[in-house]
Image (cartoon, rainbow, N blue to C red; front, side, top):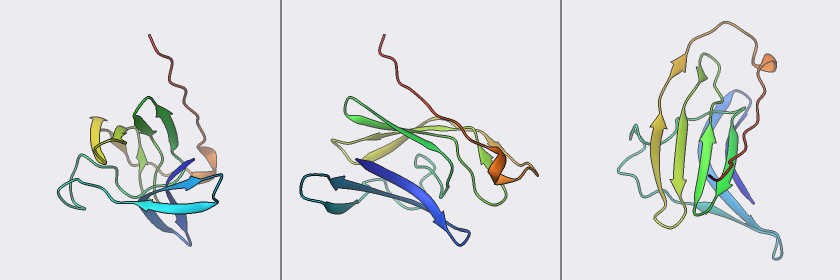
Length: 108
């Protein structure tokens, strides 16, 4: 199982962890992108979706205290690199509790 980002007391994260369910051991995954400021990796967020598909994790949407994201990122599990697919940011005044979504990958 994979877990990406989230928040605690309005501090938002963009870290990635996986758990081995049999051994009940968590592992923090290191990114191989050039830097934390690399625009090809998702910014800290909560309320997003994360889906696994083949050798990738697909992260969509989410937000922080001031922005909602309408973006799509792929994490290659074999290379440990993020890649941006769609980048959009919306600044809105709605409450975070009003936003929920889910995603599903359907192979073609």
